[in-house]
Length: 77
Image 1 (tube, one colour):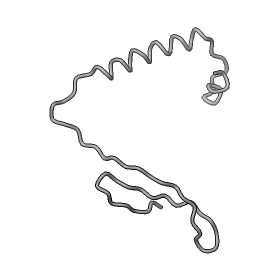
Image 2 (cartoon, rainbow, N blue to C red; image 1 turned 180 degrees about the vertical axis):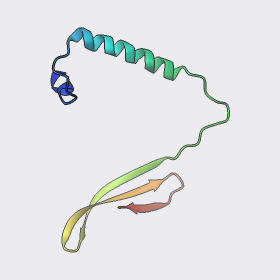
Image 3 (cartoon, rainbow, N blue to C red; image 1 turned 90 degrees about the vertical axis):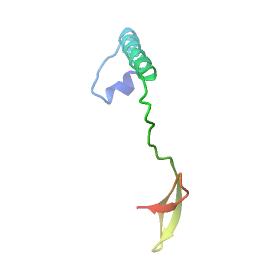
Image 4 (cartoon, rainbow, N blue to C red; image 1 turned 30 degrees about the vertical axis):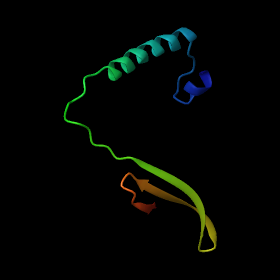
């Protein structure tokens, strides 16, 4: 855990501090999960992507293909 938080500039983190932070997060997650939802519905977009390597101009580059929920596909830059 100390290695992970060191990237954030935190030099030392005790087990009790981690426990307290987890408890606070548990409360926030519970509040979010139990919040009332608007009856009007929610817009969403469902996408999936595939990464492949292709040859372009004699070199290999990554190519990203995306598919949205309506089935249209297009290459992403």
